[in-house]
Image (cartoon, rainbow, N blue to C red; front, top):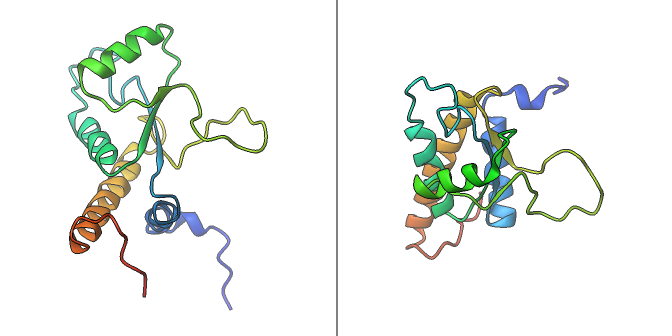
Length: 148
């Protein structure tokens, strides 16, 4: 008998968890870092267009997108996101009420240039493709196919 002590080190486990959470709640809360994830903070000429397009796809399937940032001017963050059509359901705030107090922000997944951005980007891209194909298979009703 094997013990699975590090389940989420399996490369497919995170994607499966996201799918299960979406099926249960009908949405995910996607946290994203502002600086160098959707905004060229260091002036390197980065557009971050792939991450921004992914956030738009996530919004289109009903996910909530929350920016988390240490940027001192929150009005700039909000205005920048609006100007660039970056989904924004809040800045530095939880949108899910938890029955306890915690300093940790709540999100189903976090897009952050300092926290495994490539893996999370790839998992969420696969997630969006799976959800869209399930919705298409159900004639756009939004009903999820039952798992066999």
